[in-house]
Length: 379
Image (cartoon, rainbow, N blue to C red; front, side):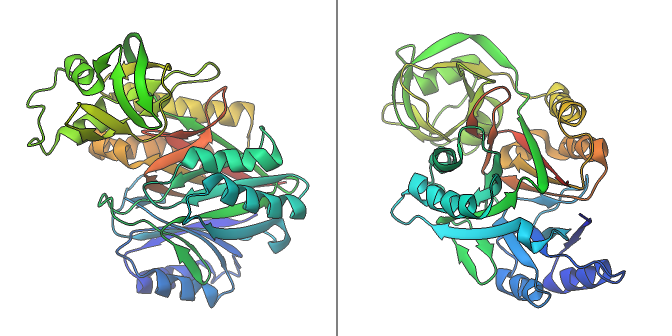
């Protein structure tokens, strides 16, 4: 397949970039679109419709096609994949039937392809993304390739969208199903945050609501390990500091740990709500604030993916946690540049509310503070 990436600050700039990309006869059939909620999705969609280009679209908290991160813009990865080799589905889950909705999409793809793989994105902050992943596993099997991220909204945490041609949803899933017998897809999710201290036991939790760890309110324990000051509802920056610098690392029996940052504090009992489920009785460790080693680990992880599983690629899609750019600031450009250099192919990436991929050596997981890189190649 041939791929090109474009970006712009307005529909007019995107139209110009699209026409320029097609001037040499390039005819994309698929566009992976990452854009700010401030952009006019309707205009962008109609622009691509006019060229008969299928859309996999997600709103973000930042976008990039190279090492320069943008905000408030539109980026696209344009691909000329044969139309028989992919299908896009968009379905909603207003009744919160996440697993069933994903299973329905997987059943349609499974009927179309002998071996389907998926790029997915979901919208709405309450979405249990792990249940979406389980839905694909239920139909296709435990080894199904599924990668993606959760839509974001420029850090407003109000309303996120997924969209395709003629349809969008603020409480739904968009899925790009690929014929894996024709399109090779490989990905890796790498966090890099270092753990600190001994394993501790979650002594009381319900779903993603963590009350106590080692019988101590989780906020108090986090305060102790992080040396936090002014731990009160009046500290506007407290939650950001906890989420970006002191997330919990949920230990897994199989594979690498997954990150579970605290996002909302219940001041009545000093508990907090994490980004994903933290089962009662599970083991957690705290994290050290990130440094350069975190970015180096991500780049090394992708280098290993290339060396061991994907020597060549036609295109690269990146889902990076919105919390990473808050933690790294301008240094984030170094990580993106390092990732792009590995294959040096057209790329599009977004800063997401969560990342969806198989944990290294483990199962499909919802991740946070993680970078998920997905490489595509036509066989």
